[in-house]
Image: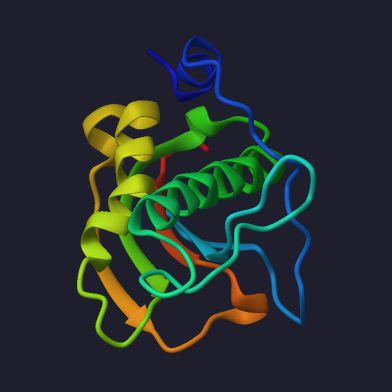
Length: 155
């Protein structure tokens, strides 16, 4: 099943594609690779999910924020490419968690993103991944995620 069809089947609501918050591109393609810049947990109403995980918000909030970040990234990809079906697979993910110094469950938080990608792309959504804690993130967002995608040869 196509990724676009899976989004409809799962009744996922993609937020409006975000706009760059600085001097950078949201996506850059070189050859068959598409690099997606760091995305945050953008809600459909334009607000962001904020709070330091393990201090201001619970781990479950962080995982939900990672999932919402995935939806925002999918919105960007769909806006840039016209169709998510041009993506062959996800290659690499870097998940950053705005975390209290003693928080240790970064992988469990970033699973919110990874689980969504597998729901949408199947096994092609299972990527190499790093999940790390950060002392802070822009505007106190709970999660920021960047990813590398491989495009289909005809895309």
